[in-house]
Amino acid sequence: MLAFTTLMLIVVVGIDIALETNILVTKAVLNPAILSVREEEFSCSPMTVNLSNIEYHSRHRYYSIMKELDPPSPPLFRDNHTVLCNESLRSDLGYGYCLPISGRKDAPFCTGADRMDLLTQHSRRTRCYASVLHMLLVEIYEELQAYARSPALVFGSLLGAVRNGSMIPFTEDTDIAYSGELSEDNDVGRALMQKGYHFFHLNIWRVCVAPTHPLAAKLYEPTLPITEAYRVPYLDLYAMEQLNDTAWSVEGYREDIIPADKVKPFSQVIINGLPFDTVHDPNYFLVEMYGDDFMVPKPRG
Image (cartoon, rainbow, N blue to C red):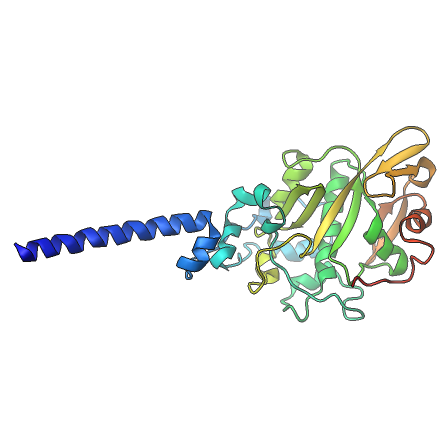
């Protein structure tokens, strides 16, 4: 009888342990803090976007090489990074759903950094933030253009173009102005997510590289924490609108108002050999924003 009782106790305890383990793993997926403490070996990989389903808007060699990556390898997430496998949380996480990416921001090493640099394997010691920013700038600009949102380079992206025809090497972000409406559920929002970008709203619309991006495995830095606000390469989107015959509003521009003849018709600038629309009078825009000495680089402290 004692042996039978002992056997039953072992069975009950075993079932209880199995149930408890299952509960912990389930909770861990929903709560990465539990996962990192109780299930250190748990890991996952997100579903990367299907390159064969993506429509790119130019025949640039970058896209041809990208297509050759199909199917791309996904990153492997462990510990609290496993939350990045849950795409349904992207709207709630904000910057936290951005793929953790590290890189250099020093000149002259990163002067002239280009998205083509990302197609080869780099470490945090050789990758430039500006290479990721260039990728974001070109692809988001192309999507806005394809869906008639009249994109225009402003602020830091315009500053880099005017100074030396490239991305600013020491910044975390780049900037595009647009006309019309944006949302996660409209044409632009869906197109960006289908290409592997995280499109989210925090005061303004912003874009960063999502865990589902085709290059995520190359760019992912597992030693970084979950991304905090402004601590990753990202792109800011600023709404612009014609108010009347004499004035436009541009988010982030002084008091938001700029004379109409300084905005339209658009002029063009060059970044890494590619043309981009910008305001009609870039010099006026930059002097008003940054002062007469805007051509002098001022690295962030």
